[in-house]
Amino acid sequence: MSVLDVTVFPHDFAWGAATAAYQIEGGWDVDGRGPSVWDTFCHAKGGVFEDHTGDVACNSYQLWEEDLKCIQQLGLTHYRLSISWSRLLPDGTTNHVNPKGVAYYNKVIDDLIACNVKPMITLYHMDLPQALQDLGGWSSTEIADIFESYARFCFKTFGDRVKLWITLNEPYVCAKLGHEDGTFAPGIKDPGISVYLAGHNMLRAHTKAWHTYNTHFRPLQAGQVSLALNSDWAEPSDPGCPKDAAATERYKDFTLGWFACPVFCTGDYPESMRARIESRSLDLGYKQGSRLPRFSKDEPSPLGTADFFALNYYTSRKVIDLNGGSKKSELSFVGDQGAEGVVDPSWPICGVHWLAVVPDGLRKLLKYIKDAYTSLPVYITENGFSQMGPVQIEDADRCRFYQDTLQEVGKAVSQDGVNVKGYFAWSLLDNFEWSHGYSVRFGLFHVDFSTPELKRTSYRSGREYAAVISKHRSQT
Ligand code: PNW
Image (cartoon, rainbow, N blue to C red; front, side):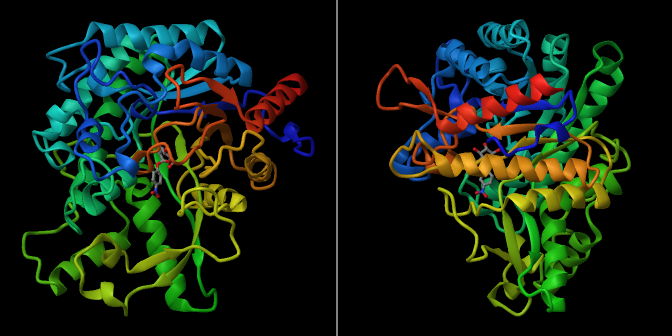
């Protein structure tokens, strides 16, 4: 990656890679871990490519030290990992703490710090304890307080060493794929209803956890807490068409704004969501009150509950207006949105079908976040490129992708004045890619899933990322 000008990145820039517990840990039923919704979803069969499961995954529960070697080989300054809630608290509540779970994460955190790598910890990355799903999961009101207790436990146990926290990863994906489309655990298909309830309770849970940290832990621990929001960059399919332009604004509101507006702007959902969901509920004869819940005056507001902006960016979309189409009369999230995102035929697709490679979309999105939402520092908490089919250790396309993307991030910093504090590649390792199982590889390190050793081997992109990091660290 010789052409990349690394001097544009601030001297304390966080160079990271990210993973998530269910996608790498394995050890699903050992040492007192309770099941999560993804264990149930995978074991039920039919929802995941060739019925793959995370039972073993990269076996990072036992092979953590191999992961640490990869982290050191890359020269990362930061590593983003998630805690398996049900490994720590097998039934999801602090009534039962699993000491082996506590010991595992203590070791990971201590090892990272001993190697001068700062941990960024995600409390929830799609893997709700099954015991809590049995109580209604994210659709139940009580989940927010249960999450707050879990977060408090983690802050108390690990917060002396962990200074960067993400409460929830991608509430959009968890709510939409898990409760509307049913393609992610817990596999609920309840179009147009559960999606908003789940999203709402996630925001309530995040809000409570942030306040707990702010009041009880920040004074002593001095860390920062946010939630990781995913968003595509979106532009009108036909830039001259006012309907497409309006649809694009709705698309952004329903994706990023759904969570960013309550936290960074107004304390409530975007106006467009309120208006659309309410009027469509009336039109479609839905009588059980608003499908988009209201924030109660008796609870703290989500407004101001993030200390930085955490962005997961993968791809971009061209948006077409859907108001005249078949979705008009359908009770669904996409019908409410009245917009559909499509892939521009000129964009290359990498691996998974939804992942069009559009590095400059990240620069545009960063500028949009600064202009529309907040001037708080931004961490890009996920961004990556997938491979399908035959393994290519010499992954020239992925190398080009990281080079182009980091160049765009550099422009956002130097030309657009966006305060980008760090970049986390998704992912450190090839891992369990949710409904695609192991058929899609996002790693900087290849994992050989065909042998029990699960050997990690650096892709060329891993070596090039290491070179960028080392160059930046030697120049600044
Ligand atoms: C993110 N989609 O999820 C997650 O945070 C990671 O766990 C995941 O491995 C990564 O992106 C790559 O997919 C997404 O279907 C999962 O649009 C699915 C989608 C988007 C993001």
